[in-house]
Amino acid sequence: MDVKEDESEAILREFREFLVSYLRGKSTSEKRGYPWKDSWQYIVSHSLRVESYAKELIELEGGLSESEALMIRAAALMHDIGSLDDRRRHAKTGAGIVENFCRNKSHITARLNVKTLLSLILTHQKKDGKEKKLPYAILKDSDILDELGAMSIFMISHQADRERYDYYAQVLKLLERNEYGFFKKQEQRLSTLGARKIMRRKFAFIKQFALHLRDELKGTEKLKL
Ligand SMILES: [Fe+2]
Image 1 (spheres, rainbow, N blue to C red):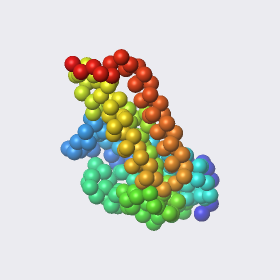
Image 2: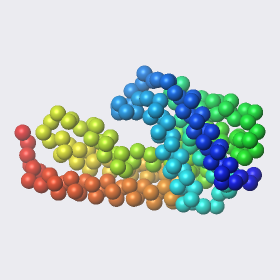
Image 3: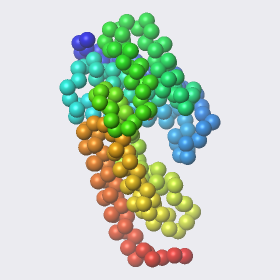
Image 4: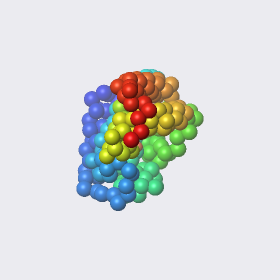
C-alpha cells in the first residue's frame, strides 16, 4: 500500500474527528485520583498526545512504510476510544468501535491494514518491554511516555498536602522517593530504543527539577513544626 503524505493527514483528521464525536458528552463515574482526568475531553487530549509520541517514534525508529506509519498513528488516536464505555475491557470495546467505523470506508481500507489496526488496539494494554513487532512496540511505548516528565510534577504535587507549610518539601520527597522508582519501572516496560531515549531526556529533566527545588529549600532541611 503506497500512501501519499496528504492522504494520510486527511485520514488522520477523519480519525481525530471521529474520536471527538464518539466521546463527546460521555461521562464516567470512576475516579482516577486526578480530577482533570475524569472527562471525555481528557481522553481526547491523551490520545492526541500519544499520537504525537507515535509520530516521533516512527521517525526515530525508521524503516516503516507510509501505510504502516498511518496505521500506527490511527491506532494511537483510537486506542482508548472504548474507555468510557467499559474501562476494564476498553481495548476490546475500542477495537469493536473502530471496526464499525472503518466498515465500508474503502478510502481507509485501501490505505491501511485495518485488521492490524484492530489488533494494535486490542493488544495495547500488555506492556512488558518485550514487544518485538515495531508497530505494536511503538503504540505501547507512546502510551507509556504520556504524562511522564514535566507532567509528573503536576501529578506528584497533587498527591502532596497543599494545606501544609511544608508543601514544597513534600513534593521533593515524593519526587525523590517515589517518582524516580516509578520512572525506572516505566523504562523497563519500554520496547524501543527511541522511547528509551525520550525517557532518559524526561528523567534528566525531573532530576534537574528536584536539584533546583532542593537548593531552594536550603535552610529548612531539618524543620519540623
Ligand atoms: Fe492510553
